[in-house]
Image (cartoon, rainbow, N blue to C red):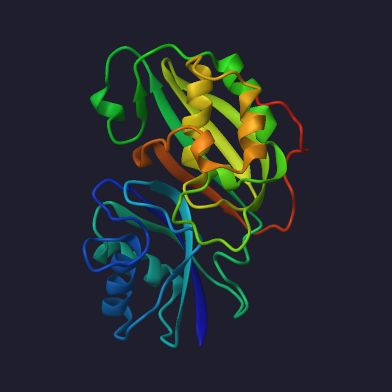
Length: 260
């Protein structure tokens, strides 16, 4: 039995998220349907992250098992000929039987993109949260600094989150100047709770708007109370950029967030 890992890119616009469901198209559902046609048997696909409806991914990791001897390049090409335009497979590789896309991961990198401009932009309509005002990026960085390291992030998880523990580690938060008026908040950590990055983004944008002082982020974190944190930023601004399996830790805790 071969265990094959896939690296998948998708535009989440119009999709009902990663996890298969009966009421709409999903990434997992499309992958399993395409693999069933390609391999001529039913396939269960496991993913590294259960992204929500509207969330995008540049490098989602998934895996499946098969006894069919199709070459790896044939798996990739075959899937790309069967998948809808919003989903593509960029890599296929054989991995060990003990590999698990989610539980073997040592870290993930998410990007949240904000369009901070008076006017909306059709080009960024499905890729960035439009905030029609200038943001104080220094205040945003000051607020983000309180989130670095290992903490109980109960205040930054969705009400329906079923994680056994709310302790997570954020290794780095960086601001990326994508283009004039478009800022990306890159959040790297070992793992994330449901909606955690979107709630972090919503809270930090409120800090950047002057609606909260940066020091209040530490108070929210310590409270473990979701009602104290900011809004859950819209799903379409979020993208999964990377899933790591290298067993190492990235930047030292306490490194100040910066504009790069």
